[in-house]
Image (cartoon, rainbow, N blue to C red; front, side, top):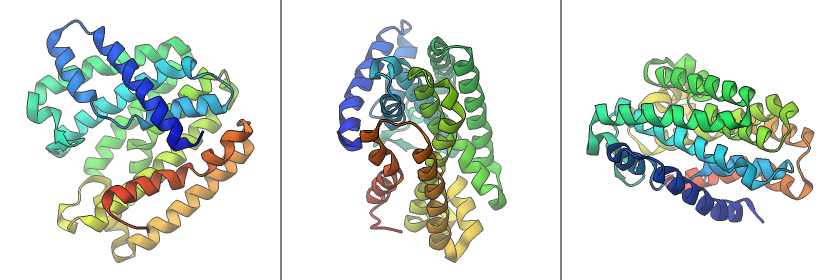
Length: 280
């Protein structure tokens, strides 16, 4: 089964698990906003948790709770980002803060975040502590995204985006009972996240007027200017080389290895296609 086929299959499973999670929310206002915040996601970070778990010899069932928790945290972070960035659309619809107001959305994310962390705690204390630290990194990354200088670019994207990719690989480590691989898997998640974000920022630079760029895309443009394409290509190839080296060092089941190696290209092809860009 290819990564694309796996994604199509497991996205439906994760969506059903999220529906089950939402059924347990008793307060109607929290339920209504939680449904809105979590609707229509690609579920790719959750899929990564399941994919890496199975590739390490674990079962999808063992990683489902962690995958759902990852998606809850991701959706909460997007809802908060939209408030900070004044983004009025998300996933083809109005952003949650436009519909419900800032204060309500902030209160609901304050419900969703500890709920997700509590779900991750079922994998043990180390898993919980790691996920807490990753969420803290996400918060620092959001600050750097808003206030950082061009010199902060790589650290900004590392913190704001890689943290939740690292959470996916963290879940896989515990769900597959390969705790000894935690540090290596976290680094793989970091590299995937950085590659994803640098291409996402490149797409913004290519399709938006410079004065409209915000966050890490603005930092990228200020850092590289007319040489943005060259900078992005060199960065991507550098991170991909390191990523492939790590894949070759880890004990993945053989029939998963090719898809894992090609995952960076799979990610960037999707991002570029969405932006209407052929290549970089």
